[in-house]
Length: 171
Image (cartoon, rainbow, N blue to C red):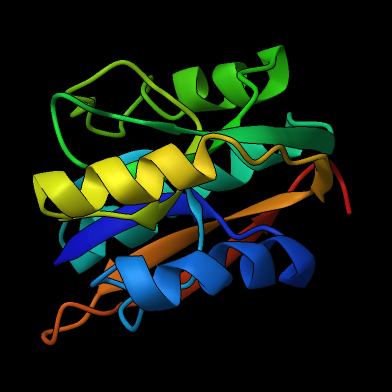
């Protein structure tokens, strides 16, 4: 089965992201707005329960809740026509990503870690140019507290669902 690890931000941040995703993200119905911490990976149920979940519990215990800041939109152009809310890459979120690449978890990270929340993807070149041009003029001043991450699994229809939530520290 395919699994992934992500942070779901607060409702306020999700509402902001969804105001764009409804129009510009074909994955809108498959997963709520999120910060991908670990790219999707394959694992069987036995390995998941015996190795991966205990490792994620240990990682979460060693993390102190932290804030993420969103100040603008950015894009992955010219690689893809994806537009996202840029998460300032602070030390806590970078360290969390690094911990999720160590140990028994597969290190399948294809690109450098860029913390973000996708708000538009799979746009034509013209649509990308229009939408990005408009959104890049907007500024955001959003600070959101993060105190957990989720292990997700992918359903047959492509949608993602939470398998387990891992709270930071000894909460």
